[in-house]
Amino acid sequence: MKKVIRIGTRESQLAVWQATQVQELLLQQGFASELVYIKSEGDIDLQTPLYEMGVQGVFTRSLDIAMLNDRIDIAVHSMKDVPTQLPKGIVQAGVLKRGSYKDLLVFKGDMATISSQLSAHNSPFTIATSSIRRKAQWLNRYPEHVIDNLRGNVNTRLRKLEESNWNGAIFAAAGLERIHLRPANAIELDWMLPAPAQGAIMVVCRDNDTYAKESCALLNDADTALCAGIERDFLRTLLGGCSTPVSALASVQNGQLHFEGSILSLDGKQKAAIEKKLPATGSTGLGTTAALELLQNGGQAIADGIRRQSNIQ
Image (tube, rainbow, N blue to C red; front, side):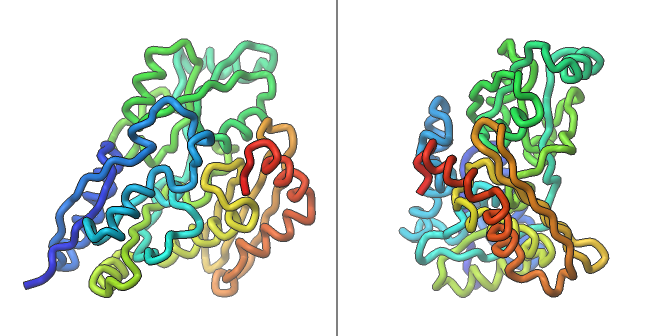
């Protein structure tokens, strides 16, 4: 009899959707599995801004512990939430085909009014987000706007937006689309560079669990794994944390890999960016080399300033 793979997941609607996707893909490959629900610190504390919680692994730590204690066999994560350095004994087992990597502005009011307010740079405008990457990019573009903290799962954040006096809030498109909650009043922020690995789903397992590794390897999308890996290398080389004002996007088209990356100061006033294009077959190590080049061209001063302000080690 085949082993039943225990899939660890957070309890939010989005997390369960992601875990269920993995469960269905495993079933297509002939593997039986069951979902095991684990609470994370990020789900329990919905008030403290993420960057004050010791954000490294805030949504993954509880699942890591459950896995190392043999309560679960694999865990499913939004890849952008996973620390760039996995805990000892845990490895990446597979990366699913990427969904949308874009950020959305979900706004209140009609489109004409919002467009007018965004165009008038002296108009009062308040945006909600808990992401310091989104905050930095928004303030870089709209320095006169106000940013408020917004925590909770997707459903909670949509409810808080509806009950607030904010003009809008920023969400990951993939999160809203996967659970069919993307509102009609949402604008894709094409100018906003995403978090490294945004839109990708990662499956991890214990390093010594051959059965889990071999089963999840069948779910791996090579292009997504390559691009998300490059983006995470870029992040790790610059600052390492999964909640920093570092953005990156790699994509493969016609055998060519196109990469964009940036780092901003926390207030959005300083920005260093880089863009690269090369054959996908020769792109190994691109994230690291791009980050090192960016550090030499304005990025180091920004990174040092971020460390001083937020105690990122």
